Length: 281
Image (cartoon, rainbow, N blue to C red; front, top):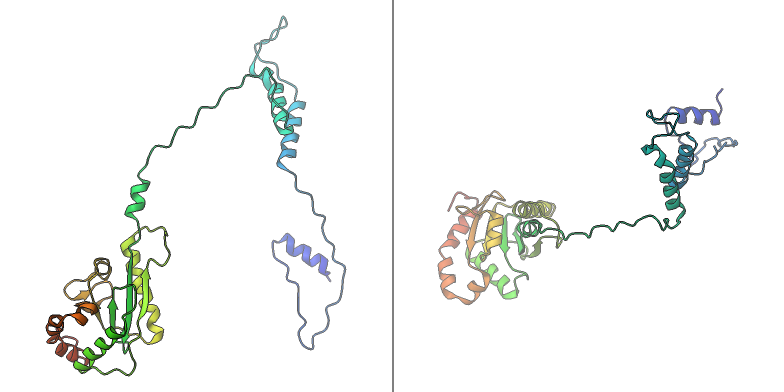
């Protein structure tokens, strides 16, 4: 029978990791104790020691006479400079100062780096920035307000009155959530527009666990960056693949009677769309 030590050696030779039990199962027999042979650990050899050994080996090799050497005298060659090179390398390893007779060659001054197009590239790849307040009407309609802060109480009451006038009744009050892009400042961006659209889609997909199943967008207010992210074309967001109504801002609706009158005929369209007639325009 192969002992535990031999078994571990076989596994190590085959490149297989050894598993050692750490817990005792209920009603299991105890593991018999044994002596483990720990292999000696060799001290790692430093780079300096290995380089010293290479220099010593190079010094032991006798110099090879050049082919043009005659009995009357030796022809000088590049091989005669090897001991000097070895001595210089050994002096550098030991930290000795170089000989005074050796000429010092000044290093050329570093030239300033030439300006590149990185600065322009960084500006071209700056992330798109926008702030957004998002609410879901019964999880079906998404209300987007391109503002830093959530709508105040008066604006929320105005939205409630508009919904009641359109015949839309909801069980819970509107709860706005803030979303801003980019999520991390000064992050490198390869494709600003594509990444901004992916971020918005990912955020809305994450809200699906809250029961959001958007069928339509209502955007209150204009923001050039948000319009570009949503890719609004012919009353539709190509980014989210949803029909979209662009409406006046909540501030304009609160303060302007003309804005309210202009919106009044559209409330009938809201009523039909909420009832399920999404083909109404």
